[in-house]
Structure formats: structure tokens, C-alpha cells
Image (cartoon, rainbow, N blue to C red):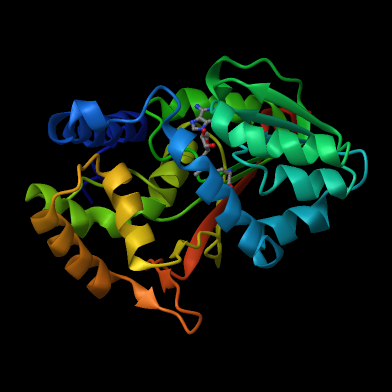
Length: 283
Ligand SMILES: C[S@@+](CC[C@H](N)C(=O)[O-])C[C@H]1O[C@@H](n2cnc3c(N)ncnc32)[C@H](O)[C@@H]1O
């Protein structure tokens, strides 16, 4: 039998991210692009949404069952603290690493108010200096990282157990048709969970994938709120004609809920990818 063509998953990942970024650069109006902290305009909303669903979050439940008081946890791309805060409340010492000061602001506020044992590192994971931890979690961070190999190798080296949470398609993929409405072309996809699993195996890491209920919930209070967020995401100025077309597309895409809010389409499952990190494998 002819062997399958070898695929360089690290190169494929890099190429996919580069193509997606290049499309953004080509289409998005430079005057409307976010500043150096991409999350600055999104952090408050992200914080509100992730708080609203935290008690049903499958990754959080699994992590709470695993960590014991005194355990050390790295939360890589910790955001506004969806995982770092409850894990610290459960007695873990959490090191929260994130490159966005806007996201960390919310985490910091709550951690300080409750005097929680969280060390905050406002830096990119790739350049941060951290000790080896019992558990590393990294939820919905990897999709747009060009050098996924460097990111994953460092994760592997810094925890006895590694948990990587991703969706099979990036959580923003539901917006792809809106790019067609705005720009006449569909948004190019970012890599997701299956590509990450393949890359880990290429790196010699025996990782396992378990489907868990989707941890992403995107709800909008109203069509106006959805449209405002789409304009930011797509770097679009408001024009009456385009807003009308986007409203129509959003009305088709979003599911109305009994409380009047609107939910973005999301698949039923996320993928939890787990493995024993290098400190465990090497004894
Ligand atoms: C979608 S949010 C997820 C936040 C959190 N893990 C959660 O699930 O609620 C992605 C976060 O990863 C952070 N991030 C992206 N690239 C990063 C990097 N290279 N190093 C550290 N943080 C990063 C962003 O600033 C953002 O806060």
C-alpha cells in the first residue's frame, strides 16, 4: 500500500494562520483596526459572558475535580479569569498568563477583592518565565498563533499535565458568511482541535482528545448589540445600506431565545486535548 503523504502540521498551521491574517490585512480598513491590545474593546463583554456560563462549564468542572488545595496551575491565555478565579477559590495557586492588559484588568480586580492566590503575568506565553506546574490549562487561545509548535512545546515543558481546549473550528467561524455580506468573500478558516492533535503527535506527544460540551456561548442582548460587535470584528464603518444587509444576515444566523436575547450558532462540542507533560514523561 502506498504510504500517506507526510504532512508537516506545524507548517500547515503556520500557513493557515498567515492566510487568515493576510485576508484581514487586505480587507479591513486600517483606520478601524483595533490598537495593540486587540481585546481592549471586547474585554468587558467577554467578561460578562464568561461569568454568565461559568457554573455549567465542562472544563471548569473537570479541573475543579482534579486540582487539590495547594496544587499549582498555569492558566495560559487566562483572559478575564473564567478558570483562574474559580480554581484559585478552590485552593489552587494559579499563575495566570495573558498578553492583554484589558482582559487581565477584570481578573486582577476580582483576585484582589477576594485576596486570591493568583500570580498575574501580563506577557505573551512564548516569552514568559514560569515554573513547572501540576496542571496547565489553555482554553481557546491557540487558533491564531502562527508558531503553534513553539507554543505547544513550551506548554509541554512547563506542566506535569497539560489540558488544551479548542473547538474543531475557531469560535468566530460562525461569522464567516458575514464577511461575504461585507466584503464579497468568505472568511478563511483558522486551524482548530484536530490540527492541534495532529501537530502534538508530530511533536512526539501522545495526546488524547475528549469531546466535551461546548464551552463557548455567544449571546447578544439585541440585534443592535450583535451588529455593533460585528462591525468591530470586521472593521466596518456604519453605512445604512451595509447595515441593512448585515442585519438581515444576522437575523438568519442568530437564534432568538425566550428571554429576547440572540444566540450565535455554535457546535455542541469542544475538544479537550490532554497529555502528560515532559516533566512527567521524563520522570
Ligand atoms: C478567547 S480568550 C480566552 C480566555 C480564557 N482562556 C477563557 O477561555 O475564558 C483568548 C485569550 O488569550 C490571550 N492570548 C492570545 N495569545 C496569547 C499569547 N501568545 N500569550 C498569552 N495570552 C494570549 C488573549 O489576550 C485572550 O485573553
